[in-house]
Image 1: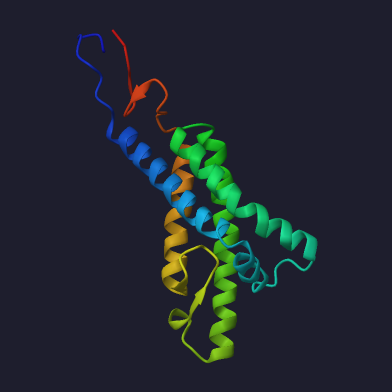
Image 2: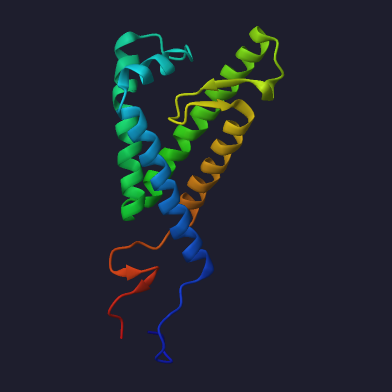
Length: 168
């Protein structure tokens, strides 16, 4: 409750931060869980980028990255280590976006297609996607992650939508 005795209403930015945090967490869990289900297929998708040439490192990335995404998604939903988790996700998304851009350019050049007409399985867990749409999605997720880094979201522990429970 505030000084006037009425419960504090959450700010619009607090609600937006909570929605963004939970949405980003759910997306990460969904995408990571999809990759965990078929690690061999994900390994093949990671290999197509030709970014990792050491087979041991390639296998390590393919085996751990999906679990890392699920873990980060859970942390975001629970409101634990939000800024650090969001920073890790922003870095991953920046790397993924650059890799997807260059893969799309390569496929465009070799297939004689306009860049935005390129469609391929980028390894995100959503199957085949149009490259321009995927770049826009990743940019949106990247901006959501940055929002979580610069704007501290209310946690769910001891709160209900950012309002302290049991406050008097």
